[in-house]
Length: 232
Image (tube, rainbow, N blue to C red; front, side, top):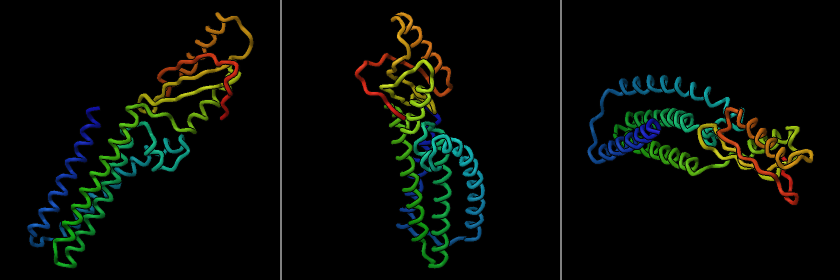
């Protein structure tokens, strides 16, 4: 948690510094300096951030394939806040560098520091927007966000594939950690066993589901006869 808070702090601090610098530049224009140095710094920064971005893309790709989503959609939907923060940070850095380069180029062409100042303010607003997005998404998971419908459908199919499960009438998958869900459901067991044996079979089914590294805990109850069956 402290690591994620520090990331948000860096975004907020970066946004404040960038906007403040831009406003000061608008109010008190500074004389033009060596543009070549600025371009070199931006180019080196872009190359380094590009390498970091490629690593975050490689980390996000398995999640996208598992969720059957495009890369950006998977990053937005993933329950892993670290993956989302790294991807957002690298993306924002690259976009910010492009904005900074455009502002520097416009400064050189117009001999006015205004485009550079506006670029700095835009970078600050970009960082603030990213920080707001990350805070909002993580808040959704803190209050308990349900799993993606495709994940839920896959879980229903997996349950129905168990020989002891005749049907599923209720299922709720709720994220309780990075790529970790709790499972709550109602199932109808096959056969017509005595109540004591049914309880043992139900606990055994819970243990089998709990064996998955993606499951934090499972609570199953017996379905009522009049409850409609779920289909994947």
